[in-house]
Image (cartoon, rainbow, N blue to C red; front, side):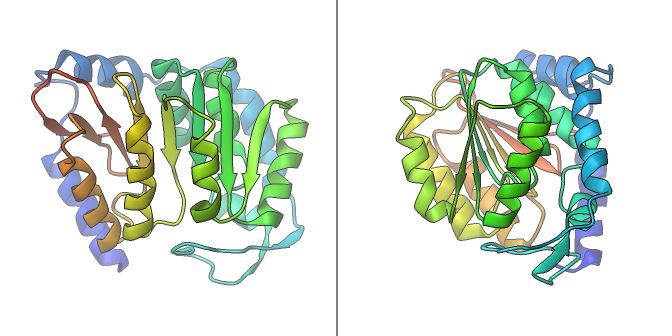
Length: 261
């Protein structure tokens, strides 16, 4: 997708989205008011951002194995860790939103597709310290850096699974009777994204939240998001442009929301 198309999508989203006012769904109003628009600083943020600061000055070069749509910025396989930190990690504002969303769900388990260097994993873990966390990463060298980050942050109970998601996701899902919180930030292609979604469906429940990253990344991702919204098991979706939230609340009229962040 061209930068022009992406910009047009962003501007259209700004024009057609809502804030908390005018929302007639009590559930979505609470989510927006208490979680999405919660700007208060939280102590957990500081420790995690120190780990990001360490990565920003790490000039080691690693070989990145890319099994998905790749990067918009740097297509080379040899990359500095500092450059990956700048170009590939979720910025603090979005990573902290994911933290708040996980805290809102109060999950017993968290599954993350796309560990990258592990900063978002730290945010998710801190949101639900007692949850079992499984994070999947396709690139072996990136996964090794994430392990260093986890060790530096004193995190010893995260299950990091390395390999192609097509090979590893089924095994991880098999360890769960049900899914509480799943964050899908990997591959960024229509067929793969829909495949991950469909693998999760048998284990969703009333309290499940699925989060899809980069739903406007490409025409394929926009198509995948449209198909996910149309699935009959899905009852509520919240489009925040950068990410899309999916819920399975029973006994509700199907509703799709666009929220300005």
